[in-house]
Image (cartoon, rainbow, N blue to C red; front, top):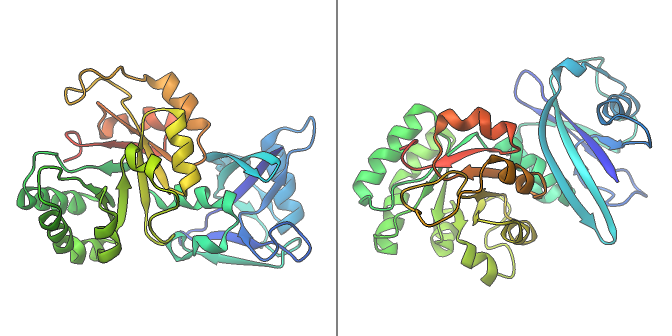
Length: 308
């Protein structure tokens, strides 16, 4: 089943969500408005029709922007949920087919209130295009300097990865960044340190080994969980665990992983399109690669040297 979801975005950065009415599957939960593509119907035409029927608006197809494709299974029912950002329409949205509608800023929405298949859409809306990672050989002081500079440049999502530093010292360094993170509205993920993330209220970035060890999501839905993936099986594990996003690497060859065969963009795109969560391209990439990454189904690009 192919389902189209419209992410209406207004000038204040708010998005429209709709509450499923009584009697329907997942009644009471919130979702992005839309519906099924009928046989022989073009997907974008289906989105126009559904938003007219559900909200009473006429959308402008020229304002459409692809966001994410989410393969999902509810019990024995499989579907492809395709989310498209809609920036222009005529008419005032009304709850014609929903119990209620509401305008919310992305970070003001509680993911637990959304239908599970819609949570990756919210994650894609919340996450920026860049995901800088601190250098592995950096000291806490140097990594802190780099992180503050990145925040001042406009980066809003950082991974705190210091494998050569004692966990307590690395955690203390992350704690020192919390005031700046709050001031800029940025998010920090501690590499592998679930306990530290719980203590500080930050996110965590899991290793591929942790994906295989954990049986449930290690943090509440309000705290970001990322994961390092290298193949479709690991992407599936990250989705099943409830991770908010993943990195997929290496896209290009890197000096730090000289023995790893690069995926290349075509294979990256194939795996990312079939993942049920936003995916960052990692490995030999920098900020200038963002347009190429977006063309190949990536949420954005992640890296160390090109970003820090």
